[in-house]
Length: 323
Image 1 (cartoon, rainbow, N blue to C red):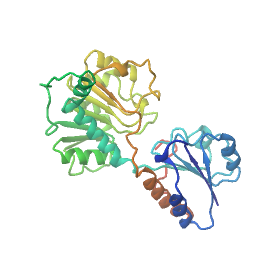
Image 2 (cartoon, rainbow, N blue to C red):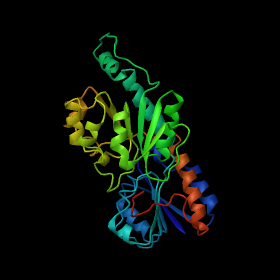
Image 3 (cartoon, rainbow, N blue to C red):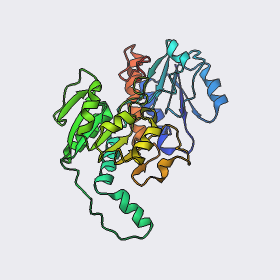
Image 4 (cartoon, one colour):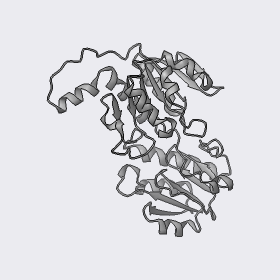
């Protein structure tokens, strides 16, 4: 069996180290491992000729239009939208992901976003740049604030748990069949999102990006939110109608936004979001950590063990649903 690993040059947090390769080999001593740079498309194409497994971070794996001998594509990210080409969807190739490894850093990122707004750091940081000493009379506390988590997967649950620990009241929206954890005060179905939105001081999008969630958050949703509410997106940019988010912020329909993802990445320099004082932008790195690849390889090996034993992958992606 041959595993093709694709990595991005210049991204040390997402590169395969020797200890990672040894861990993979320990799961399958006879496996052949080829490691290729994402920028070397000709080499990738050549190595794919006899590869059984293709693995790498989402932005490292090129779109696959000829599945050749491939049996399994594994994204070292949670997202798989680049991987799910029409050819892959129609083939017998199974798709796996690393859903779950990002929960801790992204939950902490969400907490950071929330504190930036409750403690008005977004104002004091900008005043510091201008050397202005100005106390913020509208600082407030996170305790007893209502945070709505939309999407209760690994990330949503970890964020809810962390926010609950610091005194926030956490409510959540998810698909049917989920039991309410002790750290969540109220649960709603996705079809009840409009009912939940007016209750929240912070609305956090943690849903996967699918056809059903495309532009889930539009002006109609923003108008359901409190005028003092802050919208946070750590899922995918396409979940939000960005033009209508800009208008909602301009018209003060909502009080602010914190975005780790945008519809177009990198965010174009002409985007008005850059200039808005009540907007915080981070460059899609909320899931990054020095532990990223350690966790990703550990999870890949769990899935590799199942694959070698002919069992269902623990992180198998439903190619129709997209997650």
